[in-house]
Image 1: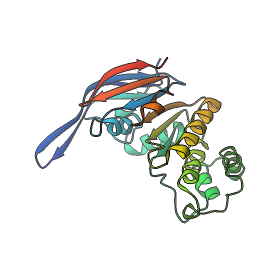
Image 2 (image 1 turned 180 degrees about the vertical axis):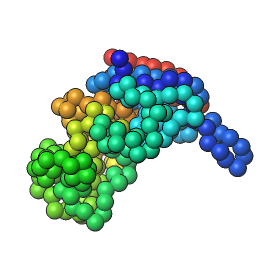
Image 3 (image 1 turned 90 degrees about the horizontal axis):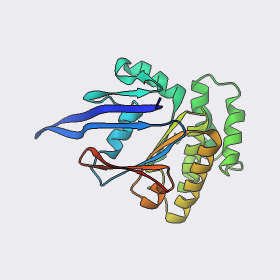
Image 4 (image 1 turned 180 degrees about the horizontal axis):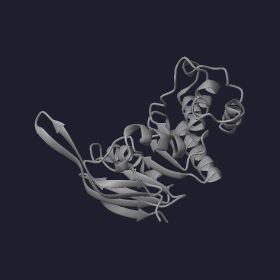
Length: 226
């Protein structure tokens, strides 16, 4: 049984010019432990698909299942609980809380989930990402690469089954981006997480197990990476 399954999903949005279809009867299954890249041109529907698979939004038609739970049957609060239990996120813009230190940013999801020893977990993860000496620094005192490492540590603190990453290296220079890529895949293997990543970087996509290429709201190609 697939960990994530989308069955004939479509996503339409209302515009001043009428209804716009972003995704059209798209189906995909993702297995536990897979690393999957979603690629395509701007406006092809990549980020919309990521949002739907993560339960941040619901499809206009069709259904999505995570670990055999139908997201369509859950209300917004129930979907938020499921995300808190099973899902981690890494965003291109980091989305760190500026008034919290690196340590506090990483601790926050664990504290909200009522985890035991959140500070100990956060310190261990920040050490893993090479920021053991930057615990008390605020985001504006960190470089872009360091902020993304804090975001990665935060994403892994709940040991999520699934990690969604939206252009995780998009705001970084090539050298820093390569370091972040290595770190992301290293932690992904260590924790056995399923990774689903939107990227415009073909080189990064090739590091995944499979590439889903989207064009005009439909999956054009399922390509296993050799």
